[in-house]
Length: 179
Image (cartoon, rainbow, N blue to C red; front, side, top):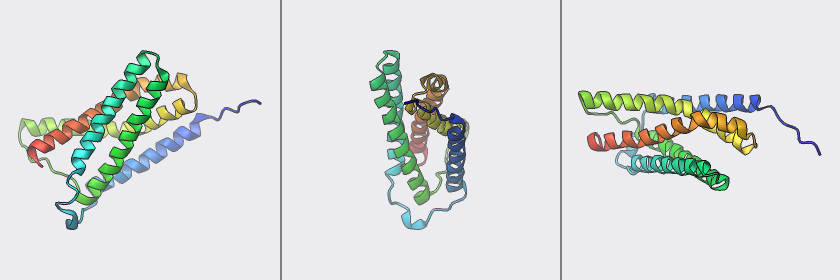
């Protein structure tokens, strides 16, 4: 039986459209939506949970890199699926936190504020870039298109790792100055 190879173009196009819709929703949630005062003081563990999930994702990504460098494809796949699960759980927790509490304004001033805003801006911009890249990289892997997977993963990995690590850094800044 001959296997039919479906063109990846419509799938990648759908990934880009879905990613655009998700990013639009998140931007609305963070910058337009106003949280209800009913949840002030409740569910305050969510920012720490977000940082934990970002940190676990970063660890899983690094472990996955180790495994692929040592040609352990099965362990690499498990690590990357774990990283994806941690990122997905982070996204749910992040949405819940911003829906309930809104945006946290950084109260620091001077050079520390400039540093924080620089890290935050790069984090936000690269997280927008990372979403379709991660989904596309997974698509190519899960459909057995490993040459394309490797080509895209070379760019996806450092961006995804940077976003995960800077998510923890942003939390640390807010923990010191705002929470």
